[in-house]
Each structure stands twice: as structure tokens, then as C-alpha cells.
Image (cartoon, rainbow, N blue to C red; front, side):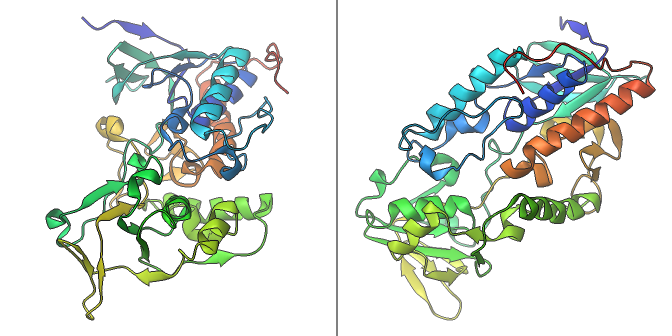
Length: 368
């Protein structure tokens, strides 16, 4: 029989960047969130990144509030090692209560309109507020193209990419216009027999530095869509691609001669309706991810446009629920700001319910 643990405050679902940021700010307001995480260790999606994604390619986009990032040291170390170690230290130093591995199966109303029930494979939590930070990594997006099922070669999503060595001598088509595609092209070009890059839209490269102001503007553009109840677009779709180390490496290898998206996959490659053809042994779908929100289905949050309407992080159809790692905060550049916003919204909600915050709570050891 499932045990119901009654909580008066808040559960955070997910212990990646957005979840840990939310929990940090909740503690700053004096609340003690329980953080549920499906993984068996710290690090969120960074645990699953390719070993070839090294620290000199990620440029500090994984930072958490209140505790400095580790010194860069050897930039050739895999981010999949360094970042999870940093997150584990963060959990320890801040004293966050992360319960893992716990898989959340559903979030539903308690029937009385007073609490949300978070159902998991380890029991149920009845709470007054939920911060959902389940991210996107577990939901790789594979677009449909005619003929793909008949391709005789190998197809993989970026989520399964583990470095260039396995592509030696292969003819590789890389699909996608974001940072994931840049990562693959920068490494596979020169190892593979040939690389072909295809995107639905012409890529936009931006010369200027990606300043804090530019980051805020990019996040704001994505927020406009989610306020309207539309499915969110990626942040890179409005920022363009910066000439960082990965892009420059791909350019130097001549890998960024982009072709428009093919119309059909054939057994040994891809074709265009106008008569074009490219031979391929491998197709890498660097086509992004979708938000992992199936467990929220009982709350019936979807709008007619297919998205979930949020104001900042607050879900309009269910104000007890905050979405971080969704829409603008699905990118690392918006995660910490979203965590702060979610914590403030939870404080407002709980204060209105007669549960005041506790300003002046003990400072978090080791945190600024």
C-alpha cells in the first residue's frame, strides 16, 4: 500500500540545474523543499552527455546560484564528469534534501482542491506547491520524414552520440541547426569519409558576444510564445549561433556548408524533390528535445495551441504548479532566473495560504 507523506510546503521534481536553482531560492526564503530525482546520482542531463563534450566547449553554462563553479583546470576533461561532481558538491554544501532514485508517475489534485498529490514509485507526497523541473533530455525529438524507416544505414539521435570515433570512414548526414549539430559536425568532420549538414531554415550566425542583456532578450522572446499557450521554441532559434570554439572548429574543417532539408530518406541516403541526392551510411538527428511532462497529464494543462500557458513559471491553469526547464528556462541561460522566479511565486502562494516565509533563515554554508 502506498504511503502518503503529508507536507505543508513544496516538492521540486528534478535535480538538474533548474531544480537545484529552485530549491536553493526556496531555502533562501526559509522553506525546506523535498527534491525528487529519477537518476541515481547528481548531475541531471549532464550525466548523459557525450564524453567528447569537454569543458573547454561548454563555457560555464551549467552554473548554480550561491556556489562558485569549479576552477576550469584541464579543459579537456569531459563535462559529463566535471559538472555532475560540481552538482554533487552543491547538494552536499547547501544541504538540499534530494531523494533519489525516485520516478514521479503522476501529479494530480487531491480531490478537495487543497493539495497536489505527487505519486511516485517510492510513495506519494501531498503538498501545497510543486516545482516541476524535469527538463527535456529524456524526450529526444525524432521528426518524421518519408522513407526514414527504410534507411539501410544507422540512425541515431544526438542523445545517443558518444563521440566521433565510431563514424570513421562513414558518410554522415547531420540534421539540425543548433548547438548539438555544431558539436557533432565539429568532431565528425575529418574523421568521417564525408559530412553533410542539413537544416529546415538557413542558420543565423551572430558575431557579437552573447551578453547578459542579449540572454534576457532571447529568453523574453521564447516567453511570449508560452504566455500565448503555444509550444515553446528553442532559445537558439531566436539567438542564432555564436562563433564559439565548437563553431569555429566546424568552420575550419569545412563542415558548415549547409543544405536545405531533404524531402525523403532512401535506403542509401537522402533526396530532394528538385532532383538532389546525397549518399549516407549514417544520419544523426540533432533535432532537439521536448519537455518531459507526461506525469502532469492528470492536471489537463494543455491549451488548444498545444502548449501550456505560463506567466513566468506559474501555470495559469494550475497556480500551485511552477514549470522550470520549460520554454525559456529549458535553456541553461534561463534556468537560474526561472528558479528564483518559481521560488518567489511559491512564497506568494504559501503566504496567501497562511504559511509565511521565514526571512532571516540560517545562511547556506559555503554559499554567497
